[in-house]
Length: 294
Image (cartoon, rainbow, N blue to C red; front, side):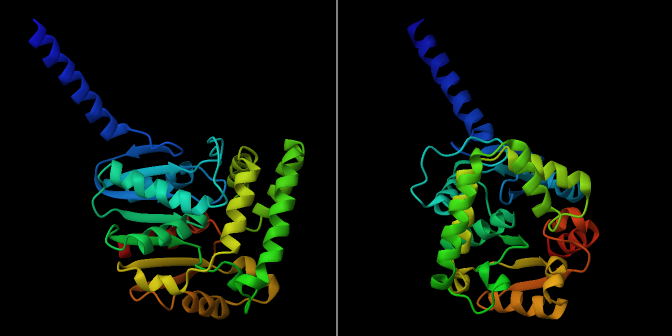
């Protein structure tokens, strides 16, 4: 009888381990797994949940196992207890731990905006881990496209001021924050209904986390490190929002290709219709590229 109890206990433990391997949560990440097949890690951008990729998953269809994450502090997911001023580094490590925990073999890693920056950092840190990268409107040195000729030192005072103002805004009423975000998002998203979805995600996000993430994006330059990436990479960018400031398709494409010059196996293209949320604004362009690249 004792031997039977031990055997049953071991079986229950084994079942528990199997369940954890299949459905376990990496602390800090809100995750879900959809489908079966080639693993795809989907990383959303600033303030967005994994839901931002729902239309993309539907279009890609069968043959993929989608691992959809929402980062800590975004869209209602609880913030980290502490990030020690290294939020993006901690996010990279969390995502690497997730890949290892779920034993994802050569995943395609797709990231939008901040998520694209994290995808690049994962491939720099672990060049043999992914099979391909899809980077959606993200740059290795964000200030470079907004302020040509800028350097890390020149942008730090502006980034620090921006972080301070964003943290101070967290005490404003939700309606005020929503109004501000709505104005900002009108230059990033074309569809009014989707703007409202993104506004709510932003209001539901932890402003200190958002402020820190933005600060780190503005004060990080990984252009030289791109040479460490070994896998084919697709970079899709947008320029429409920059047109009022004198940008053209040609000048924006030149900026993008220049920033990705150290990445050997890269394809760069720009949407002629969409803003920052390319997968929402210009799905035909986006999915045509996905089908061709993947």
